[in-house]
Amino acid sequence: MEGTANLVVYRNGEIIRNTHEGVRFVSQNLFSFVVPCTMTLMELQNGLCQNMENGTLMRVSRILYRNPIVVFGGLIRFDTMPITDKASMQNMFQIHRQTHMRHPQIELYVEFEAVEAVAVQNDIDVNDDRAAVYEGMNNDSEEDFEATYEAGDEDEDGDVGVEATAENVVVHPSSSQPMGVPPFMRELDLDAMHTPEFLEYANIGDPETWPAYEGPTLVANPALRRTSKGRPKLTRYLNEMDSRDMHGPRICRLCGAQGHSRSRCPQRAGPSGAAS
Image (cartoon, rainbow, N blue to C red; front, side):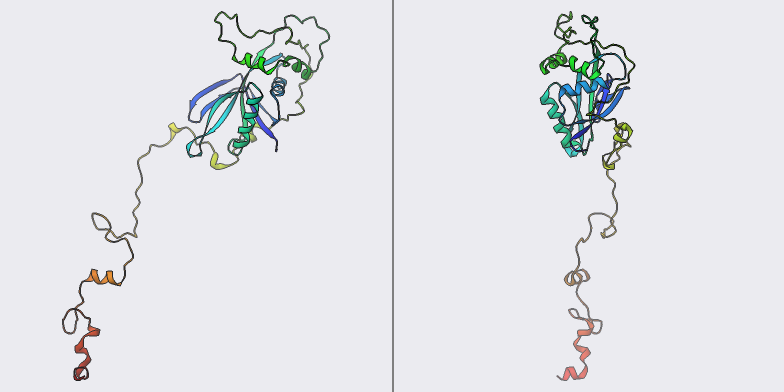
């Protein structure tokens, strides 16, 4: 569908680096949906939280994009690109538009963290709308989200880090109402989406299992006339002059002289030829 992108989310999994194709995401809990190419970062965070299958209130703490990079020979290797602001979102969709024929989906590695209720547990006016809950939780600016992504290693004692504050936390009461898919998303068949569109772009497998290279294979060409050793005698078309050089001087079979053939021998003319 034009103007949309297929999104595959690897939730709280593992990042494997230095593979034959670059970076690879692995997760036991993954899901997929379709997003518009005009989606903002806040809408992406809300959509990711709403697609969680548990009833715990979660928050997105980290988003990594599996960025395809075209190298020599037209091959593609993958690297990670953090998604932290509007510019990185636009860059991700721009890369997808350029490489969607080779790599049809957008792969994201997402880490979630549970939100603990601290100061608003007695709020009885909480709405049961999950979209409104995540709207209030993700109302922070893009600078706050970027700071959340980069925080964690500034202080070994844990004094400087990410803390859930009362202004950014909304308590969602337990409810048995099933979660719905947001209006800007729809569910996808993950198996059909992973089917390669072009057979020439299929996975080449593990290089360690390839057969050993035994050097170039030489195939004899019967069109070339070769001697027992050395280079070919002649590799071009022969003409009349070449034939004369190869066979030596002509010898007449009638008179035994050199320089002419039997058909042009003067003795063949007979007495009439001698008289003239």
